Structure formats: structure tokens, C-alpha cells
Length: 123
Image 1 (cartoon, rainbow, N blue to C red):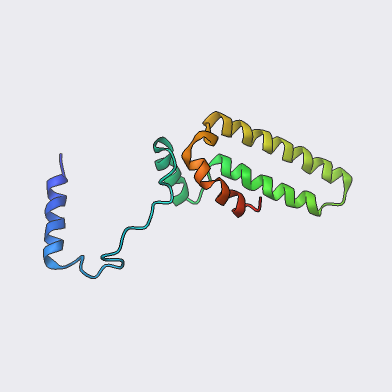
Image 2 (tube, rainbow, N blue to C red; image 1 turned 90 degrees about the vertical axis):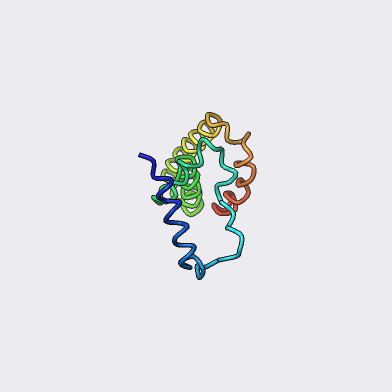
């Protein structure tokens, strides 16, 4: 069943009755889509993850790397430092493998957001 014509009719009725006249942002350009530079095949997935407050795997690993670096900087016990360093190495390897697998460094999205991501995570 095609609902397109019903939807169009409802929109026309709303326009005629002035339902859209006092919406916030009326007459202003739409905000830029922050995922505009994410490849098409990943954009909807990222949007769903973002709306669910879930980070993509590579961003979660990047976040873990930052936390491990902070722990390592504040740690003075050689045994714990060794443990954190081992975990950090594993996370970096996993991150690099993911980035290589997804060919993220070659995408416009990665180049667009790399600086922002690094600044946000304190790199």
C-alpha cells in the first residue's frame, strides 16, 4: 500500500492551515549534517549508533587508548605500568587493523574529522 499520496495531502493541509508558520528556524538554512562526510554505506549505521549513544568500535577503542594513556601517565607502580602498556599496545594494534580494514584513512570523512577527533580525545 502506497501512503505517499496520503502523506502529501496531510502536508498540504498543514501548510494551508498554517501549522508550519511558527516553527523554530523557519526561513533559516538547515544545519549541516555532521555525518555528511561519512561514506554513504556507513552513514545510516553511524546515525543509528549515535542516536543510541553507542560509539562505533574504532571510536570506542580510541577512547580506551586515551584512558589507558592517562592511567599510564599517573601510574608509578612498574608492574601496573607494564600491564597498562601491554593493554595500550593491544588497543593500538586493534585500532590500526580496524582503520586499515575499513580503509578509513582514505575516506574524505576521516580526513575531515581526524583533527577534531584527535583534539577531542586530547591527541
